[in-house]
Length: 167
Image 1 (cartoon, rainbow, N blue to C red):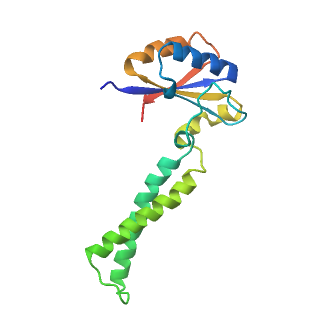
Image 2 (cartoon, rainbow, N blue to C red; image 1 turned 90 degrees about the horizontal axis):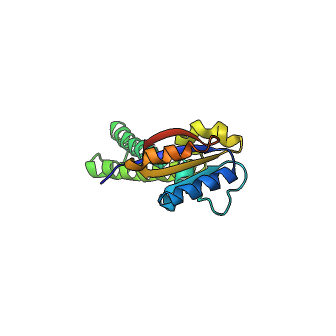
Image 3 (tube, one colour; image 1 turned 180 degrees about the vertical axis):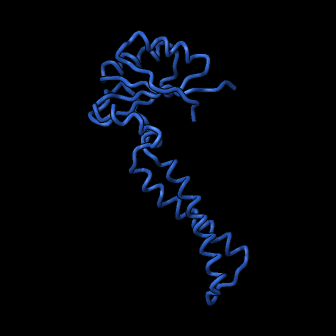
């Protein structure tokens, strides 16, 4: 299976983004592999908006929440055993249940927080987004990277800012 890359383009306005998107589709890029983010103003109907998972820190936050919550469950189990809390007998079932419960609580709480925060991977693009520009994320096969980056050079207003492996 061929590797995919995510290209991050900063586009100055909706018209340029629509032109770029149409050219990507004509270049046989799957429209579901293009995701646009804009802080201010609406995207035109033809531009695919990024999902909540791509725009927010939901995934990152929930992963941290699971580990922190499970760690807290473990810590509370150890503290309960050390201080010999009445009614608490230390066994691995209790420790496991405390870690699972803590992990689930951490997941839930951190997911709520993460869904309200912008994606930390997009932090470097925030100044441009605040200026009203559009971030266009395009997932392509390795063999298409050169073609798409060359195509973007036809548009001097479009800037390829970053290239990374796709999630």
